[in-house]
Figure: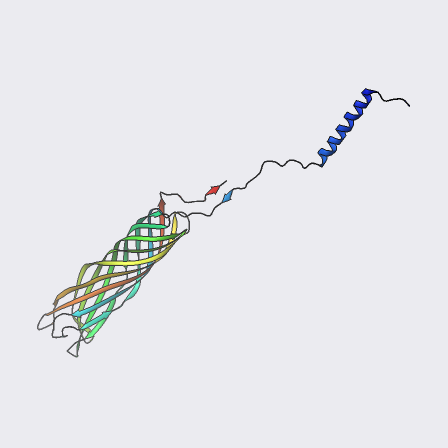
Length: 266
């Protein structure tokens, strides 16, 4: 038999090695491409910081207790007349919020027009004569501080401060179906207010809220000295204790100076 030459042996060895390498490479997994990590979209973090203004609409309940302070020909001292009229109110508010983590502090001013008017008739010592008391608050105004807790786009808050009321108080003396005399005294009452509510951020700038406010104006004495009852003019001093409950829904637009919005982390 013919012997294989050295060159042929080397060629066969190289070819065999190449085939083995190719077979081994075919069995190896294909290298993966660069790792892909999709962006993580975190929830919107609502920011309550900013200056805002808006409008409100609701209902108001006035509670007046009118007490005669001097005995007259019509009523003894200490006679009480109570009024509790309930009607529509509406107005505007403006203020600012500043958020520190979940705590929101701020201040607010409001002006509310009132359609409230109440009338109550009180019998007198003279069977044919009666006295009519009328209370008509025309407007309310408040200046308050606020503090609240922010749960993302919900804000729970309380408020308190000063309150004012522009009101007309009327005393009318009636006999039968006609009025003998009537007098109206207009005044501005001052007092305090406390309240609270919940506000929901619909967009980054627009929010709606529900609010309750209690306003206390204390007691003020009025002297109705122009009740012309013949033959002797009637002077009627009364003290009027006044409180009001306001139930309001409001819409605010806020001019932000803080952050907020969707945070994207890669």
